[in-house]
Length: 450
Ligand code: SAH
Ligand code: SF4
Ligand code: F3S
Image (cartoon, rainbow, N blue to C red):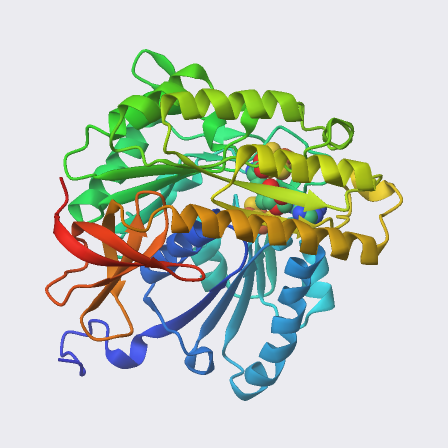
């Protein structure tokens, strides 16, 4: 029961409220959870209502210009709110914080603190210290060991960062600058974190890294690759499903491909960004693979796991991209047959090599993006249609909008709505797919998961 406690312990009036907004990739989602936990240890509870917040934390993304601009439009809106709530603190975290640092304080008087992705374990101290501060160091200590223990926040699924940063330096990309060099977390810590999550009811873990399949963490007997880590995690009692993202084609080694064939816990879905189907553009992008080597890789993966569903990322309008280059990308998409894909219009990012080159005309890039997305949408629908009539397994994540409805993901990562009044969140269920809608499947329960 809330109310004052005689021994001076935390009273409801002492509780401070934290509002977190997360932009960008899944690693930012993971980081936001960890920052909320770190501030939780200092008496902050999270709220969904920004107007009642004592602290607002914006965890930002720098990947494209539009993503970065969102920060400044949100800060503009926070100005009015802070005028009414002068005690409210505003923090900027994530990749824009790393890229722009002090500049954010200069541009935006409402901001109290700026913290980069490698420094957020020091956030509680920054908040308590007061004043306007910036911390974008890449410290030598491991931030993860200094953070409080994980809480399972999103029901039966959780993210687990195993690797961070990137040494690939694709010509368009800011990540090697905002996240720094590749660093892998040690095996023992990851197993501990995974076991802790499973004890709290998590049944599916998605391993995260900007280059997750470049994982090379310290483990018993030396350096472990991702496949070995996945094989060890698959032994954790109660962990039913493992996924990982995002992979680079050049780091898909034989052991990882084999793991897709022989580990039932490793889900048949792989996000494998290719960016372009033109060798000339891939070279200019510094991707270090060709369209042909990507297609051969897809063949090997499908030989190990024939029903695997592949997704990808594409950039259209990279500097110098001709119509013929773009046609080569469409050819690659037709040759692979993707179950899903993200596609972006090239955005010049300050400090990256490609930003120096003359851009493709915006109308041209827009038209290409539309055509590519049309093809991808058709492939996505075909992949969904192919599921109708089949039995799949779904992990229930929440109840649906309609009474008696459960919602979850299939092994192939399709969102599935199931009419199942007896269903429970966290249950792994065998269902038969009855229909395919725009972005999800409908299904009926068949029995418990095998
Ligand atoms: N580590 C992953 C993806 C990182 S960013 C990889 O290696 O592919 C996610 C996606 O954003 C990229 O795959 C790319 O398609 C897109 N992206 C990155 N920089 C971009 C830019 N400057 N303009 C447009 N899209 C970009
Ligand atoms: Fe960016 Fe390339 Fe690294 Fe992916 S591999 S994070 S696209 S530099
Ligand atoms: Fe964005 Fe940083 Fe992730 S730039 S995509 S939040 S690594």
